[in-house]
Length: 124
View (tube, one colour):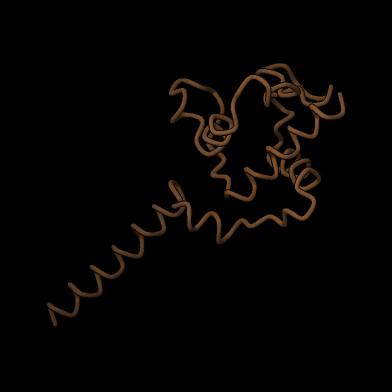
């Protein structure tokens, strides 16, 4: 009887730890599995991601949005491809004191946002 209780308690504890882990620091495979984006028209998908994550509440993009954080119209010329993708993956890993939160973006969300930001450069 005691062994059964220990087994149940251990199982419940393991499940709770997994839930906490996947909620606060989801692994990359989980993000990619649960947050896929169709990249057929990546720039359009990226514009949707910018709206979903409300990037304009802090950044000015294509002449719209706030100026709490740097404007993103020319970010693809200021940062190289790798740095931009790493920043979107986890901003605090690049600059620990940044105000930008980690949105836990999937790889396809990152690619869509980058494609949208790159499309802004072409229009100008």
